[in-house]
Image (cartoon, rainbow, N blue to C red; front, side, top):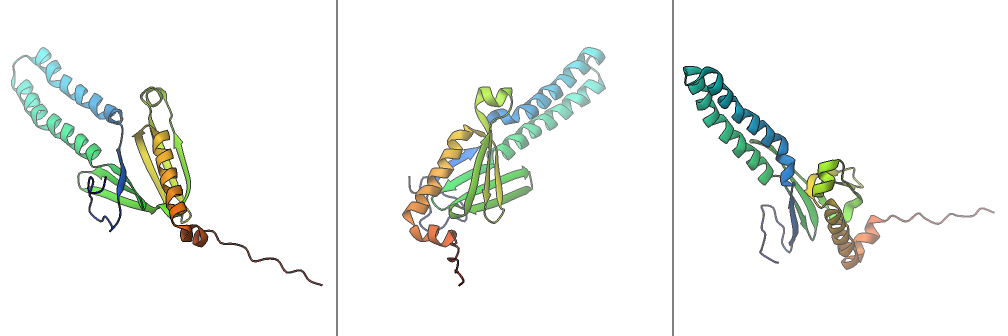
Length: 183
């Protein structure tokens, strides 16, 4: 698997184990809006016939709808979650010129939970995975396919890292000093 996936900021000896995107069904709202936008020129043609208004609406449609489809795809394609043998990285493409990147070292994981909520997410098996660390950093993996498998992959990778590096677990767990008895 080494060399199969590479990304900017990848560290020496760091291997990409998994890469996830949001489920395609998470774009359903944008698809519905695109379909509704497509009906506007059709209705205008039925009401006004071949007029200037219809021609203007079709011209706007030919520019706006393909741009909307491309932007929706661009945001979906660049919204990525990467699990390596050292950390979990969330690349969140919010808009065309707005990207947020967060990362969590696997040795700092405190809690990993997943949620599947609703009819379509249950039928299509997608949902959210929430990851929290001791430093209150939180990564929300929204709309990923098979959230239970994602949940297990993150937990297993973190457990393997702790098992392979016993120093990580001993420095992360602070032991209380023994109590002194008086008298």
